[in-house]
Structure formats: C-alpha cells, structure tokens
Amino acid sequence: MLYALDKSLGSEEGFGQVKACLTSPLAKLVTWGILSALLYHLVAGVRHLMMDMGIGESLEGGKLGSKIVIAVSVVVIVLAGVWIW
Figure 1: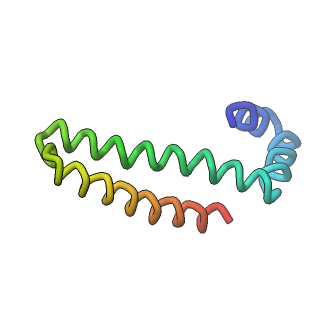
Figure 2: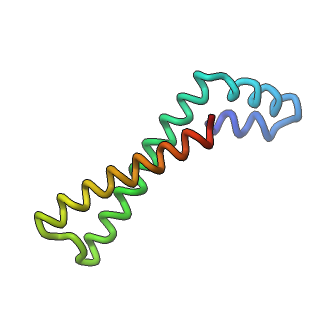
C-alpha cells in the first residue's frame, strides 16, 4: 500500500496505473481483508482501554465485552466492505 501511495503521488501516469490496479476485484478483496483486520484490532483495542479504566474486568463482563467486540466488528467490517465495493 505504501508503494502504491508513493507511485500515485509521483506522477499523473502513476496515479492512473494505481487507480487501474486498485479497481480490480482481487485488489478490492485484499484491501477489504487488510482493512477488516485493522478495524477488528481497533475495536478490540478500545475494549482493552475500557478494561484499563475498570469497566468489564469481571468474568461476566469479559464475556459480554468479547461478544460486543465481535458484533461491532462485524458491523464495521460490513460497512467497510460496502464502502470499498
């Protein structure tokens, strides 16, 4: 992705090449996969920050928190997929 950013900022021709490459279904799938992993990591990180503040530290709270993380992640990942496609 950093290579694509560098190439697209290099020239107008480079931007066109990167744009053509990223419009393919395989590139969109790979982008969605990377973005999905980052979004899940973000949501789980927010959960851990809340646990550091003392919210959801019990066993029941941990189980509920993990279910909430999965549910929120699925919603955000689907929204990201709609945005990419």
